Image 1 (spheres, one colour):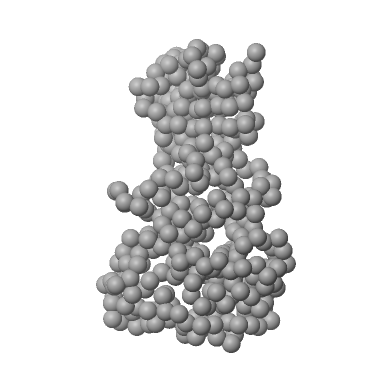
Image 2: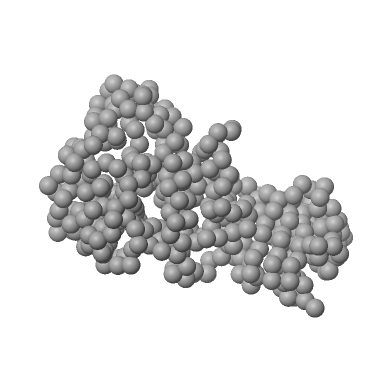
Amino acid sequence: MAARAVLVEADGGSRGNPGPAGYGAVLRDPATGEVLAERSEAIGTATNNVAEYRGLIAGLAAAAELGADEVEVRMDSKLVVEQMCGRWQIKHPGLRPLAAEAAQLVGRFTAVRFSWIPRDRNTHADALANAAMDAAAAAGVATPAVEPPRVVEPPRRLGGPEPAGGGAAKVAARAESPGADLTSAPVSWEPRPSFTATRLILIRHGETEYTEQGRYSGRGDIPLSSKGQAQVRATAARVAALAPNAVAVVSSPLSRCTATAEAIAAAVGDLPVRRDDELIECDFGAWEGRTFAEVREGWAGELDAWLASTRVAPPDGESFAAVAERCDRVVRRLLDAYPGQTVVVVSHVSPIKLMLRDALAATDSFLHRLYLDAAGVSVLDRWPDGGVAVRSVNETAHLADL
């Protein structure tokens, strides 16, 4: 009888990086530890990372041959595990086709879990890889003078930065998969069915006088301007066409958002507007109501520190790290409450930027490079297994005639 669950232990390496290279993979029964299959091969001249990916691919292919439905992969390569889980970028072009090939194999199973283990717990696969490297060296493989793939630091994960201890670190540890271990999230470039996702329609409120004047507008309850009211009417019509089956409208408690939300709620079927205090804008403290130039003149040092780190708050204000943490809680509540449904979320520049940053696994520089128009629309899909798709960012075509 074909094994339905298989444990894959894989490794790879080279003598010289790059140099004579090989990989090893061991397949076990996860219940008994019995060895079901072994794979190893000398692959000529390659880098450590290439050999590690080749070991992973060989192990997954062998698991498919055994008829496995569920696979647990254990490797002592932090880079391969983190890249396959989608938490680290793959910047070296030599690794991208290997990661794509591994992802195609992952898609053949019902579930695949990736786990990092210390090298001393991967001795069987390591021994097979070393034997393959010996075979490559014995075959007279030369060691060319080329640079090995650079280990890429991981981009920001969901929930903001990771200071040692504290709430933000706990949020980041949960990262992309609500209520689940991130390493169990499947990795694939194959399009997913959108009807299984929770779709979040992210709306920035309409324009206010502060918006037009370029002033920091945080906790002050500034109402919509006449132009903002016109924008809201156009946005409501756009959302009604985009999400006619929306089941909920959730808003920041500030009036510029609730007015926007109420117009949208009426357009999509007279839904009630639910206020969520954690969708409120960042507290800009002493900078509230001031322009960037005014803040630069009065708080030059504080402004530089704030622009350099999401952990720094304006004087008497709130850091973006704190905003990210509460926005993460909002998203998780919505995923739990509305699985597979469409929800309209009306908020402000900072919360929406942070949600998009985390969905795209972008760095903090994203926050200062992305422009979000008043009444702009962004669309984000989230799947139960942690999958994410950003469908659009800052749609504004519906505002063209205003």
